Amino acid sequence: MRNILILIFYTLFLFSMLYSKDTKYGVGIILGNPEGLSFEIDRFSLKDKKSDSISMAINFNTKEEYFYFHIDYLIKDHKFIQKKDLTGELPFYWGIGLKLESKNYISMIENIFGIRFILGAEYRFEEIPFTIFTILAPVIDFSPKTSISLAPSLGVRYLFK
Image 1: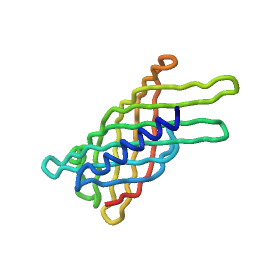
Image 2: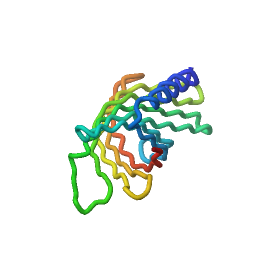
Image 3: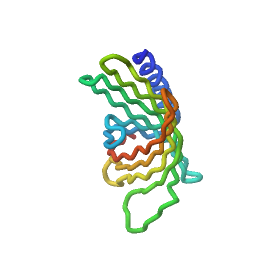
Image 4: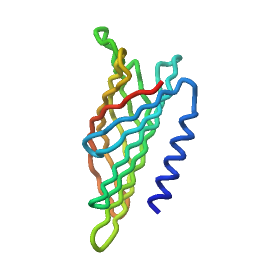
């Protein structure tokens, strides 16, 4: 079941890469909650200085048989924070996402499904194709039991143009 979900999400992610000619792609690492690989597709609009993004993170831990995946839809406002002494961009963003977590214990498998509400900021360097980002995401888990948690994270991505 897990492999089917991974295949579905990767397929959606790859098809969305063909979204627009103004699209930028990023691959990197994310630390905090979650930890793992980070992917992003960002489509920028020159007209209103906003962009929409699809962000995804994956964590596999084979020793503990743990899997984490989230996919977020983000709206980035490139005009929200403007500093004249910065050479790069500092967009603020917000959005909503889905989370899937699977833990395999000795006697049972626990699958956790939740919704993420994202607030964050990133710095895009002008001279080099990297971005650093921070996210604060309140999460509501619905399955197997309802709970609320906070998922802070920090990461870096290499940007493809």
